[in-house]
Length: 328
Length: 301
Image 1 (tube, rainbow over the protein chains, first blue to last red):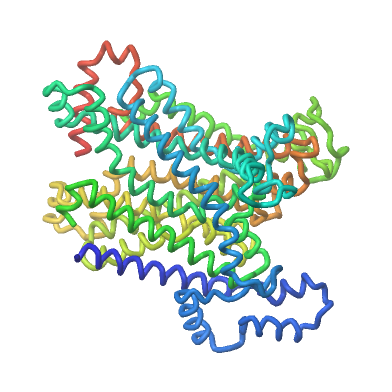
Image 2 (image 1 turned 30 degrees about the horizontal axis):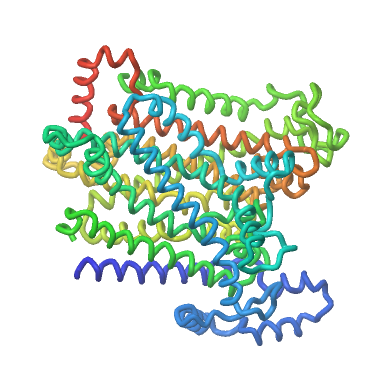
């Protein structure tokens, strides 16, 4: 019970800190929505008219900042997210977010899970066959791939597979000539457009999982209970998965939860390079247009996603690991 | 001495050090590596392919790509090293003092560390870099502010395990001041983890800085690899037959990042002999190697 209380208060405090930062950073720095809107309309509308229009959408920079802050916190929590004050002037932020969210969750979420699953299995095998052929070249290779910036790899993939050989599309989320729907053509097009960005992410993120899993596995294999398993005459398979891998995975669970939490915010550059219209792409646009309402909501969602993931990881740990239960 | 010997015996460490040394040399004496000394000048025909005169060709504005890569090295390297160093100092200060002082100070510092760790870093950096203006100072500050928390957690954990060791107890009995104990007794014992943290933070700084510059949020007044990527993307270099404009700086970023990652992993192997690659030579010397490993393990525990 104390454990849950501690966790929940930590959750609320972090959320508050993130929301507060996100309120004050844009407001205490140069540039504001009015200026960028003026730049975009190129003086076709007067300053006062634009200010009036933004005010009607809820942007009132001159009112008391404390009142603004309290209203902002209340609106964020109650889901009253307001409307965009940039290109899609007046478009509810909620609609925009729900349009972009499935793309990011689908592309980056699935890739993150795949990278974790594949990396863990490869790491288990490499650690088990210590000194084998796989284990001899694997660490150096994946130390290097995990240091590759994924936008550079993405550009390389676009160049080779999309520009030179024209095998796969290198931008957009689907072929816009196809009507969105549950038709095989549309689904095929979506999958086709996801291959390159997913490959870039997979190649750069799988190395970390393989290496940590291999290293955990090697440490675990030296434990007494593994020797005990051998002495009992258990099959290799049983020792490998049931004894060693099961324990070696525990430290990676929270790392996996963190990376699931960072799915929404972590792949901004991937979406940028591949013009993939997910929430990261949306944030970049919002930042360059000083679209405060959109920025605020996205930033809150990013933080909530990480917090939920960590909370879930804690509970999964307690469920998987009796030692964590005893400590709790 | 023993430490340097094991460093030189590790292939990954050697590879990482050589790459890092080469880039350092280039960034100190860029003039030695190219005959063009004003890489931003629009002195040549645009869109030339690679040739002996222009190793990587020219940009769509007629700048020599190779000399831009050479002159861009300094900026990328300096940001990585400076941001990595400051982030490490901050992690050490916060992590070690939290562990050593304990109590409410520890509670507060740990909470602070965890909050920073959870904040969505890259969006925050983008927002900060966008609004704080585009200079190297802002870039480094932003990278330090977001890059220290992971290391602080690790260092705190190690410092906690050291706290009740005898040599610290004896320092306390001698009546040393707390600051003396932290600075001269605890921190030297944690050197290898601190260096590993620096390498991790530097790797983070290389990729994050390049990413920001690629988005056009860097200092535009001098060359850097990320800046080149920004212009290459802006001018659609990949689509219009100037792939080296984007690939050359991109690969340099990747190689510099790989050098930090290799050194970092080598540190792991040195600190934990169980992880070292198994070679035939070692198998023969198995008995002696095991003995050495036991000593190190006792040391770590």
